[in-house]
Length: 197
Image (cartoon, rainbow, N blue to C red; front, side, top):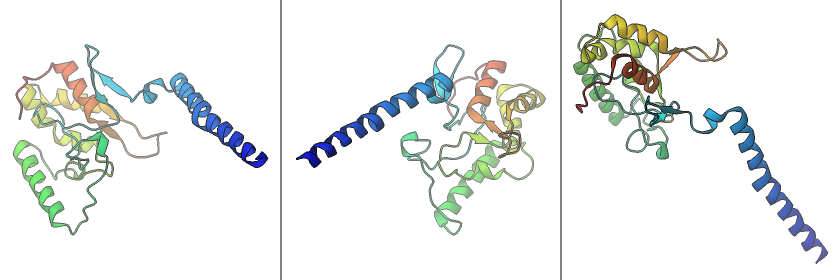
C-alpha cells in the first residue's frame, strides 16, 4: 500500500506540474513576449475584421490579386488538413495538375514574360505556405495592374516594398507574403469590384 500511495502522489504531482503549471507558464510567457505570434499572427483589414493569418495561405482567384502557391491541404487551403500531396515526379496525376495550372496561368497572364516561377505550380509540404518569391509576384504584376487599371510600375513598387528579407540576413530566401501584399494592394489602390472569377 505504501508503494501504491507513493506512486499515486508522484503521478498527481507530475500531472499538475506538466499538465497544468508548465502549460500555464508557457502560455503566459508567450502572451507577454510574443503576443501577436501566440494569437495566430492574424491580419486585419482597415475595419478591424480578421482576413486571415500571415502564416496560412489562402486562395485568391480575382485577377486584381496576387495568387499564391497551389494547395494540396484537404480540399485546398484547409488548415485542418495541412499536408502535401505526396505525388512524385513520375505521377501522372501530378503532371496533369501542373499542366492544367500552367495553361490557366498562361491564359490569365498573357502579358507575363519568361517561364512561370516554379512555386506557382508546385505545392508546399504543408499545403498552406503563404509566401511566394519576389520573382513569382513580379511575374503577376501585369495582370494585377490591368485588373486594377493602374500603371504596372506602381504595382512593381508595391511588390518591392513587400519583400521580406532573409532571416537574420542570411537564412532562407527573400519572400513576399501573398495575403499581406494583397491587403497592401487594397489599401493603396482600393478594393476591386467583387466579381468572382
